[in-house]
Length: 259
Image 1: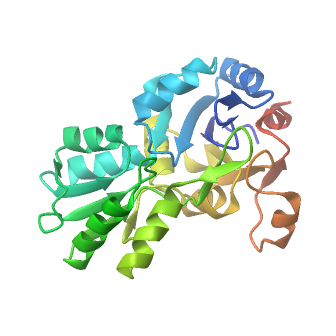
Image 2 (image 1 turned 90 degrees about the vertical axis):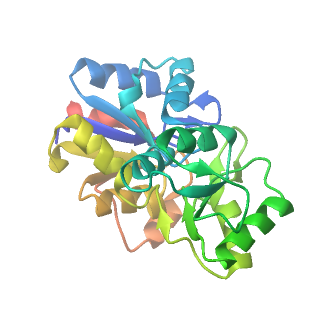
C-alpha cells in the first residue's frame, strides 16, 4: 500500500531527545520527493506547534507549521471553538499558558475562580502547584490533561512525562481527567486528516507506543506501523492482544512500502 500521508509520532520514532534517529532524514526526503505528505503528531505540550516545528527544523528536516500537530494544538482549538472566556489553571510550561491565553482563556491561580485545571508536563512541578490544582478540582473545576504518557524517550533512556504529573494530581484529587487532548484519543489525527484533504485509508500513522500511538490509529480508523526504536520491545508486542498492520525496526523501513 502506497500511503499518501504519513502521520509520524516524534519521541521514540523520529528522535530521542535532541538526537534525530538513524535514517529519518533520508526517508523523509525520499517520500517527500514521491509526493507523500508528512505530518508530525506529538503528545509533547512543552512547546506549542510552532515551537515544535522550529525544533524539527533544527534537526535538518524541512517542515512547515501546518505539518505539526500536538496535544496543545487540540487544547487550543477547543478553547477557541468551545470554551472562550473559560478560567483555567495551567500546570505546565509557560508557552502552554501563553497559547491558552491567546486562544481566549483567562489564566488564574485561584482555585476558587478556576473552571478547568489543565495539566501537562511541568518541569517546575511542585507541591504548591499540586495543592492548588487539588483544591480547584475539589471545588468543582474540570480536570483536563494534555496526555497520560508516564515517560518519554530521551538521549540516555527515559524521563518522566506528563502522565507522571497528572498521576500525582489525580491521586490527590481522587478523580481521573475527564478530557485528554493527546493520543490515544484521535483528535490530532483528525486535525491532520482535515488538513490533508485525504481519505483515512490513504494515511498511515507510525509510532513507538502501543498504548497511545496504535490506539490513536485505531480510534481514527487508520492503519498503523509500529517502530521498535522507542518504548515498545518485541517482547511487549508479542504479549499485546492488539497488533499493528506493520512492524519496523525504525522509520526508515517505511521505504519497503514504496519499493
